[in-house]
Structures are given as C-alpha cells and as structure tokens.
Length: 180
Image (cartoon, rainbow, N blue to C red):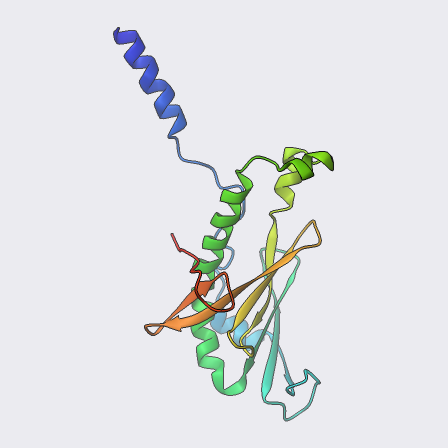
C-alpha cells in the first residue's frame, strides 16, 4: 500500500513540475529606453507620413538587441512623455502576450495544419512573433506584432485606465491582456 502511495505522489510531482518557457520572455527587460530615445533615429513626418522638417509626428526607429529586427515607434512630439510611460510597461505586456501565445501553442495541432504536413516543431514556429511598430499616433495607441516564420501579424491596443497603461486584444479596449 505504501508503495502505491509513493507511486501516486511521484507521478503527481512529475506532472506539477514548473513548465519551461518555449517562447522568449523579458525581451525588453534590459533595454534602457532613455538611452534608446536619445540614440534612435528620429524623423519628423506630417499626418500623411511624408518626411517634412516641421512635421508634428516623430517617427522613431531603433534596433533591438534580442533580434535582427527593427522596432519602430511613432508619436506626436508633445506626447513623448506618455510614449515613455508606455515603453516602461512594454516588457510586462510582451511577457503576457508571449504567455498567451504559449498557451495557444500547447493546444493540439489543428486538423487543417496536420493536413498541410505540419510537424510539432513547424507548428511551434507559427507562434514566433516579434514586436514591430508601436504607433502612439493612432487612436487607440497600438503595437503590431509580425510573425517570424509565417505570413501573419496581430495588433495589441493600449489605453490608460486609472492613470496606468493597460494592454488589450481589441481596438475597443474591452478584452484585457492579463499580466502575470
């Protein structure tokens, strides 16, 4: 009887071991946004996105150390402080998004993907996204993620609630992205 109890707890503990993150986390954790905002490439553009010397919108571009991809942000010159506040929360939002994508990845491969010959490894690659354009000039501000290995993208939206930035899955800012 004692042996059966030990077996039960051995199996149970094997199932409850902490899971390993498949998708990257803390991609913005060590990024010094003050330095980045000073050293990134800035261009002034007008409402139509044309480069003009006296444009009211700043187009901001910098490379991110975690990937070979460019990260682009745009904001109205007078909203730079709000843009900085949102950047300060970006790591937390990105981690929550990666966690959500990872939970989707844990689901069985859909039949249509199996029919197309997807293996588990190939299916996992469809969940690799990187942040691309943070548009503070749009209403609501949003961040576009683009896929690394497939032709896909999605957008995350931001709104201030009780003086703090919150991330949402929808443009109406109703479906909150839960941070862990």
